[in-house]
Length: 449
Image 1 (spheres, helix red, strand yellow):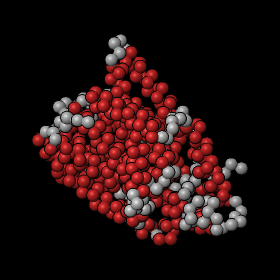
Image 2 (cartoon, helix red, strand yellow):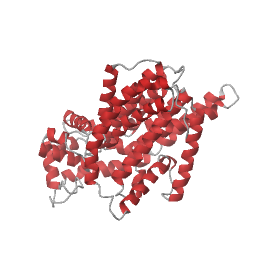
Image 3 (cartoon, helix red, strand yellow):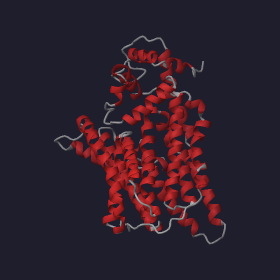
């Protein structure tokens, strides 16, 4: 894909009011399905976090590895919600939804900043706001790291390119702020190290492959790339220390390659179109669909908007690479897990919206494009939202009701792992943690007896 890397001339932006309403739609699932969301409780690795906080102390826990993650920013935020809610899981649910709405707002602000029209912005925000695939990251508190990482990515892109889009300069104060945003993203989630790297790569490309006047981008690029590299080196120690995929027989590399290819070909279409097969042939068809959408979107976009698309696609590839690297030991169906859809949607929804907008603009009648645009947004929003009603009761039962019930049942085998499902935290230890963090009281508030 060849992209003409040039500076924008005049960026025409729609009123900011356009981007305010759609993010609030992100609260709709919480409002309609609160009875289900209120049942969720601490799940899986969340018990491990509680265990480590109680055993090692808050300071050591914050600066220790979490799997392959070195994420003290996320841990501080998570611990803040834990103590602010006095162990009540509801605070995690509200916190996740609040961050989700903030990310959707930043998403719209970013698209507005780059001169996209009302249809592209509202369509993109609505698909991201109400998508049913967010059940996992909204209902499991540990996934709040996703929202933090994506939020810092969007904020970094917004503030990094604002002077470039508006013909301004990069002060030392701004560069330091960019460094902080890059660091926060990298320290929130393992794949957050990509934030500063992809921004830096595009900045360098704008100079070396585009306009020499873009030399001013090189200085702030250093400020965002360096923290990503530093944190990336720290994370690499955790990844390769725990990673057993790459062995001398080459089987590990083959698994990694399979996961990477499925990551970048099946997502995000597999979960959005639904009822598809998890096969190589299906993967190839969806890759062709992605290629068609990307090519048309790049063709229809303005020259400077192509740069944003390139940045997002670079992030998509890097995200797929790191995900495959860390999860290649799991089955291939894990590549289309719901937790991975959020970032994929941020990349692809604006591409799809750009293509649809151009098609609607070709309608000859005066008011038809607007009417058709409203109908497309309405129908698409209903399509991506509809399956909440099918899945949220099941998730609430498995990740809430059953866990809560097991904490109050008379335990016949304290060495079992019914509550946490983790080898490191048996039921006896889980009951100790419930008492230490007052979790039992929070759980009883929603027992349906």
